[in-house]
Image (cartoon, rainbow, N blue to C red; front, side, top):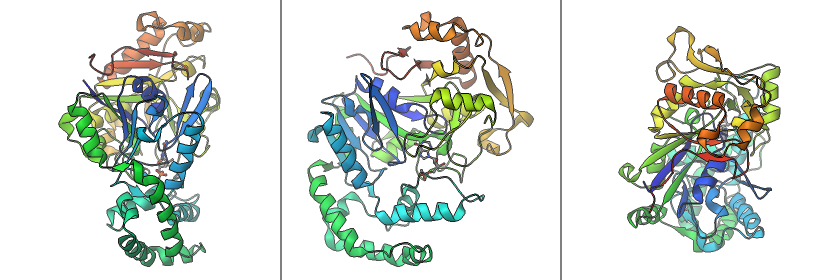
Length: 431
Ligand code: IMP
């Protein structure tokens, strides 16, 4: 197995960054295939905290190619800041970064529209609770075939015509929201500046990944957000605007699905959600608050407090099916071990099925997880370095999860540091 997809199995924020970082140590290429700077990965290396929003988490390893694929929407100003802060840490040399010519560009008017629409909808049923980074409006323009691809930044005449087309479509909405008028000339100036520094890093990233796979290199395809935020299969309309499931890796990078060898899904040992939309196991009580505090459940991108709840196995099983997961990675087990109790949702009342009925009416059937009231649990857990060394109740919990989801546990994470990771399976075939 030399091509592995890693995707979120819940509503995002599952700790993908840490797992990708752990697996990226063995990868030659790490590529993102969807989303943009709505994602936020907090990585802790040698006690240093690094947050990336666009650059894949492989950026911490010298020599690893970091790819931003065609399915992404890229805010060049954010990318420039991220590159600068990684450079300041001595990370991400220019020859390590590659940006797809086919990715779409986020302009200031996309951000302005995203924020204005959220403001207008605030408090009502139509508020999605987006990250306000312009993601939805950029994908909307892409689907309407008036988006700006990275390649267009190098074609001023075509770009000007495309920007004028967008001005004609969204100008009235900007005016109605009392936002600054659509300034084609200012956008052209931004584009010219971006084109200069992007020129050495742009390429056909699909061809790059394809060639790497053919050469037997280890390629890690890093998803953003999670299965239940998928545009087609998530809790629509409370979703993001891209394909977050494993199939999105193939279309978002431009490589055939037959080149993908394995799919690891990431889930916390409990559940969180940020933004509006159904969340059957949400805890609106002191336990939910404690999960938020102990787990530091505040968004890496927006700082918003996340809603917290028990692990939802029917939803996880649905996510596993959508992505054809071959392995499941459970993160933040240390947080669950500090609560003094644990419960898990094993089914929904009335036989509700996530794929058929959605999650809006789902009411969870909860089961208590034995052994989590042991005050010595956290200490025993964090000392374990191998699966066999894990406390018995933790192993029983993982067995229960694997049995319900019908996917084996491949990795367990019980703390932010790299050492606090137990691999059950190897992510790549040994060479
Ligand atoms: P957008 O992707 O900014 O359009 O936001 C759409 C929905 O996806 C909102 O509910 C966001 O909170 C959620 N979302 C987007 N990105 C992330 C993420 O990286 N983690 C968790 N939720 C996200």
